[in-house]
Length: 129
Image 1 (tube, one colour):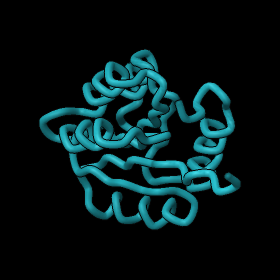
Image 2 (cartoon, one colour):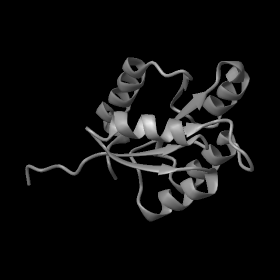
Image 3 (cartoon, helix red, strand yellow):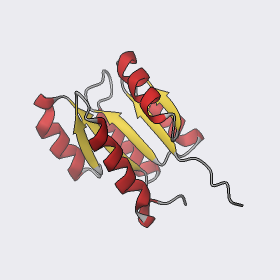
Image 4 (tube, helix red, strand yellow):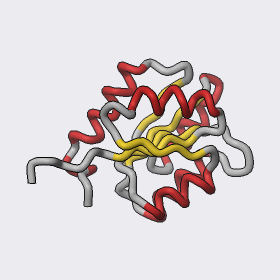
């Protein structure tokens, strides 16, 4: 089979505009799913494993670090990139200790984000199981 399945990206953010902007950016190269909160994100992961999760730190009810810990319990091989506002550097550091691959600050530098995804997806350890 020469047609390799498209990689899956799950974008988790409580801001609809962020979901829309990131979906538009990534849908050219990836199958994109979005979730407006942590609970929906976990449900989406249980339905179909994504290759990469872009996860907002600052969300109501369940913050991104809590969601990250749950994702790692479901499947520790899923790569998670935390999305942060600049004042959340300490939370981002906590997320890295909890298994996040890295973090990107808002507003987004799409070249940096693209590079981070390429680094994750080119790493054989992060290949589909």
